[in-house]
Image (cartoon, rainbow, N blue to C red; front, side, top):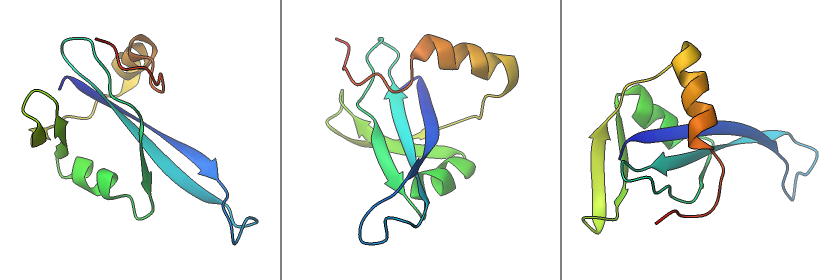
Length: 95
């Protein structure tokens, strides 16, 4: 794994369609250029808690099992550059 991008989007769902909620989406971007499909996380956001603790667990396709990675938050101009380069939200898995 090389990067994980995340975004938060408003959502509404039945039976309480008028109640505004938010969902978080994460996407893994691998060192070889592939990117996984978006994963949705509902409140309480377990992914956020995990990331704030400095780690992230995901299925490693090379191993065929879950693997936990150490992570570091990126911010500022570097974050903006990576956001544009990584194309968070693209749903195709690159080979």
